Length: 73
Ligand SMILES: [Zn+2]
Image (spheres, rainbow, N blue to C red):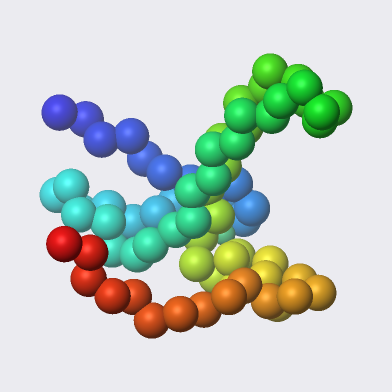
């Protein structure tokens, strides 16, 4: 089974994968834009590596809310 290589949309870096295991994490966004957007009926899909994510959110006016993960049963 061929795995699809993932690339960061922001910097173009490939997300390293070895034997089906990704060696780093990324942010993946799939957005179905609707009627009230200028992109009605478009689906946008993007991947952002952790480095680009950190750079991206550091420019936010309000930083992302960070909470500790608790195990979901
Ligand atoms: Zn990147």
